Image (cartoon, rainbow, N blue to C red; front, side, top):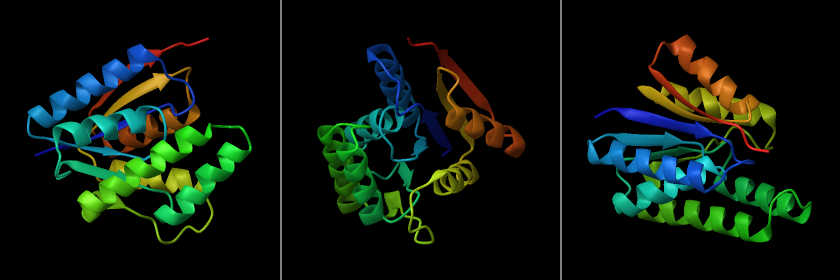
Length: 169
């Protein structure tokens, strides 16, 4: 079994990106492989949602968080209060991650070292995702910095990378 990481934008998505992510995740799991993602909104959320639908016991899912789930949840609800995301997005994401943890506690890998969610914590999470992956499929939207960083790290590890590029207004 191979572990294939899914990376992409949390800010900018559309229905086509969502369909593409879900289709690829279904194919990965149907081939007997697993997905690795970062537990964020957007591409990560779509990938995790689809994986949980086709793998109800969540044995082929690894989600790396930049901190413990409780800290991550507080961060997202704070971002909702700031108007960066909606309250519904924060609630849906945390519910998804909580369900995953209840279904298979090993599927949710929490970083107990970081107590603050910041760029350093996110980039440390990306390194863990790439370390746990045999391949990367990137949904690169509007030349996202985080997705580019992930692509670069996969290149350094010399794992295969497949990039889907999107430009959204």
